[in-house]
Figure 1 (tube, rainbow over the protein chains, first blue to last red):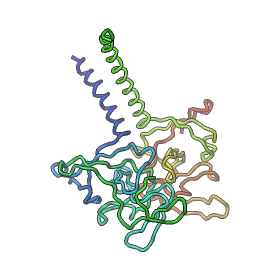
Figure 2: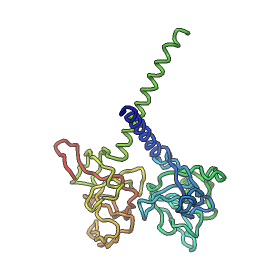
Figure 3: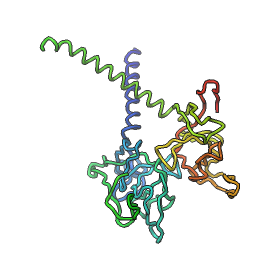
Figure 4: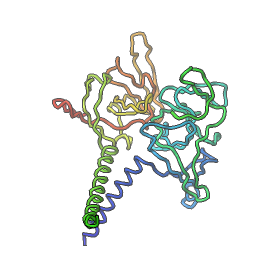
Length: 183
Length: 162
């Protein structure tokens, strides 16, 4: 009587361990709540039926240990104001870049080890324009594909908004505009 | 060639079973290291005299930071805000919402009054004159904390609970 139960328990434990290791190392799925990344990503609402209409994305964590992110990637990060919450934003600038603060004429240089993130829907997004540059260590993964709903399945592309970031050319210390480059 | 094939099948099965067992073992190690307890060796003078500069080995538990049970005075491991590939060991001096008075590092510095913002902690090394910490890089987001130090296991004469 107990034999099949024990077998099932062992198999479940083994499967759970492999799943947890996979979601820690390779990547995980996330449902989008919030409109800050519209139109790229759409939210589902709180009740169950509407939740099925929201986007579900897969984010990979393989780039996470080496922090090999590129400007323009959509990333998953831990919120600097609420450590329990994960946010999905676009990575706009890395350390050393000069960022044009929208809505004013100031430009700021991103300090060492930090980055600047913004939501695609500027009006509704709580991001670096509110809480400033964030440490790169808060970034937990890169969103690669949308897996749900079926008519929105596809890659999430790396896009850099025009005219906002100026990059430092490492060799000549001249601020230039250049095409997308990974760190 | 044909005489080898009957021997390959049980061999293949054994290789498969051993691989599955090895995978499960490695997953188990990973889960313990990532979610329960980890071993760390700390180098550097920033936590003198609590930890020596030449490599005390500490046990770091990963549960307190996940469930937000870090208190003032705890020694924690965290990702450095200035370099995410570096793990630093510091003491928590202030939690979110608290008001702190930070003494100057050098004689001529000013006393700072800091209110720790929401979602952040204030970290300082015990060796105030030789530690790069929140006095340099500001309050640290809670999401960068990795774990709480609770036991020193090396050097052997110095087993200490924190």
